[in-house]
Image (cartoon, rainbow over all chains, first blue to last red; front, top):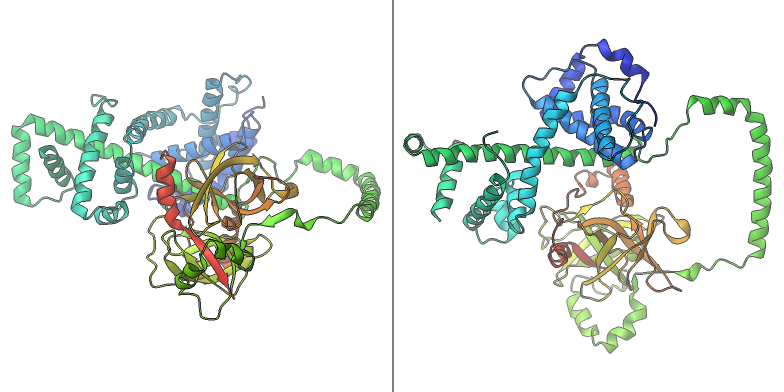
Length: 201
Length: 370
């Protein structure tokens, strides 16, 4: 087991958020794919080495990095968002934390790791995990819906297609028929969703 | 039916698509009827969840696209092996440079000598061990007569210019709904090509690019009868399939589309070629250029050749070659500017029959003529 430790991380701990990076994250929140690409390009290899040096594989590194990107994206979208460290440090810390958790879940040892804390990111990860759990409910509900309901609702809510387009690609005679079918599917989906999801929370 | 109407009304209310009077009427209804109020609150929450779900899902997809793109351009590492060595190795290298150089040249000379000997004494390589899976039209003419198909051939091929001679046949599949197709280069052994869909409709096409070395070719349907497909049902996968993964293919060994299934039996192709892989499935002449799908409906390869001495040993070009080819064409040819390879398969979790039903519309028979 290697150490979760990189020189530059310790050095940059006290550095405040860079205005350029703040702008980059704003662009990320606004779905600018160039921004996501830039962040990806600048950080992936770092995370890859981190995971590979700590008994992970390439695919695991990609998963962890992409999960960190989603955490970052969700954080960037929230209004109260301020980056208090360098972006690299933040991504490194999130990935390190996520990987530690993954290792613990797999029952592998994580000794020799705790001494080198990057920046605290527990709260962000907790928020991210709560949200993923909620989204997991939606995912399971959609997947247990069956066809054609699943594809139909996905086309409308995820691919944001119009009812006319949907009518054509699913072979309904007109948009009204498709709409009717959509509402029927939607009611089933809501039933499945709310059987798992507690409104009181 | 009433529930649907109510849901429709609530959705219009939440999206702010109501007229002022209707809105005030509905708001009054809401305050007077707690059940309806509850439904509105519930639906609002549901839509928020759905929005967030869609947003994250779309973001995840864009991350996958970015990953594929950056690993092709080499801006991020594409494998576990690091491309450079660390400082220590460089120091060692500097120290032992001379010794290594001498050792390497001795090894090199020996290797050359041995391989020269090997070439001299070994029998000439059997180039016929691989059989390309395109159909040679001349060669099978006899068979066609037996099956009484010649007549159909003549009447159906009304798009082939008069006097043209059919050269080769194979399979092609759409990589962009606007009519861009991929097939093997050896299928396009002519000056022009027409493609036929599974219902027998023929379309004129243009040969845009042929890469004999990779054995890949790109065609574009150029026919007013062709209606572009908005979204392709399958996606093209950049990552390689796993050993033992179940695979299936759709192709045209006959004039009719034929389904076959098998599995990935080796990660490399003929004689260790890393750009292709070995499948165990039944393929026949005409299957060349056929897409190889995994169980999620993602294209992982393109059937190219089979080994003649062994049954069911088929080689497929890995699909990442398509990405590479299109990417390089994009930099040189403006007609590829808008080509977007499908990155999301809508065939996941579907049973095989429905997968095939959706995918077969995008797989075509190609006939090349001179």
